[in-house]
Image (cartoon, rainbow, N blue to C red; front, side, top):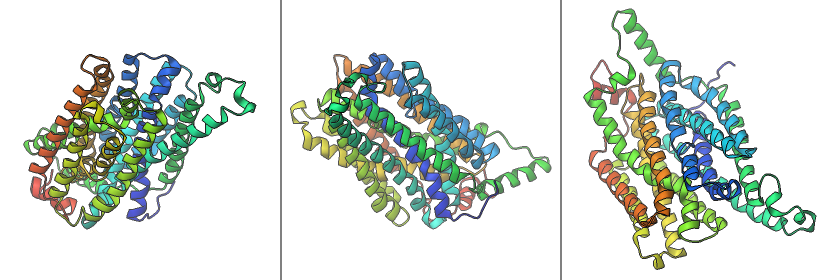
Amino acid sequence: MSEKKVSPWLQTSIAAMTSYIDAGSIVAIGAGLSLWESYLGLSRFQVGLLTAFSSNALGAAIGALLGGMLCDRWGRKFVYTYDLILYMLGMLLVVFGLHYGMLFVGFMMVGIAVGADVVASWTLIAEQAPAQNRARHCGAAQFAWALGPAVVLMMSVGLGLAFQSMANWELVSHWGEKEILWGNYALLANRIVFGHLIVVAFITWLLRLRMPESENWKAAKAREKALEEAGEKKKSAFRELLLPVNVKTVLFLCGVYVIWNLCAGTMGILMPYIYENVCQISNTMSCALTIIIFLTSTISTLLIFMWWGDRWSRRWIYFAMAALFVLAWSLFLLPAAWITLPVLILFAVLVGINNGSGQQAFYQLWCSELFPARYRASAQGFTFFAARITVGIWTALVPMIMASSYGFPLAAKCMVGFALFSLLVGTLYAPDTSGKTLEQIERERYGEKGG
């Protein structure tokens, strides 16, 4: 299809929907994890593998690494035009899943698709955003990242309550709760939630067909072609990442995002599981608590990151948001008897504020600003790969730690440490990029010839 002139905000909005279906898929998995465990009779090891190879971890890691390279070679549009087809096919396997194999393959396909799509979309948003409003545009993806889980969880709670009421109707009660449509009513609700993500992905895919390619990428490819014609061959993207300036940047971004994501990834996919198994609350109540997290995230993104990210010191915004995250996870270090519903609500609010305006929002912004267009997506793909690989290993271990003699308190102590480390790295080494064009940042970091 032919490309039309699309406003920067429309491009941002369409690209940001990746975050909706990415985070939505993670939380939908988390909301239904204990239901699938019961329905299929899964072991803790199988539960760990599902979380590890899903869109929360290894699947997305592989997709990000491959997608980043394809983005820089063939363009941002090439990736985000086709990856959603893989996403929808994977989701269909989950919606109609009857055994562990279908569920595992579906989660893996969805993970690869969202990993590639996140890299393409986040890169595109930063490249087409005006320099003076780049944080505001990047914040739109963060807003969608919080909105997706909020909608998923509200659907889960609403459908769960509706089907629970239906189970008492004489019309359907003779079927037996455990025999209705591939599992009980709660699991049917989870399948419907996954189905809604297919619909959103399909609409997003249609809208993207007329989206233009990134002008920043096209200009970088034109410069690269001119250099090649002049006989000057550029190194590969991953060899360029070994330059001292890039190694420092990769380590900085890993300290900010990869370490923080060990906590956030646990929360995203395992928090309902933790609520139910550690705090002994119902699946419906655990979903309601997680809704608070993501509704707070949407408000935080709008009122803090999008409103002040281009106006105030980013270093101090980062510090304040990261400090709230440390405080939130520290609540789980309290004696078990003290971890009551009000404490869990406080945890949800503090984590929600951080999720909206903390490490992930700044990672998305800085990762796009600190690398040249020629290998920007590859660099983001590599760091995203590192984040999802590590969280995949960690979330596979968490259920086993919970089942061990150490229990969840050990995992909680680790996550407080992760959050504190991320706070220190981001606060101490935050770059000064606010209000600068991507070209200006590139010249300052790499000289007149650029990266």
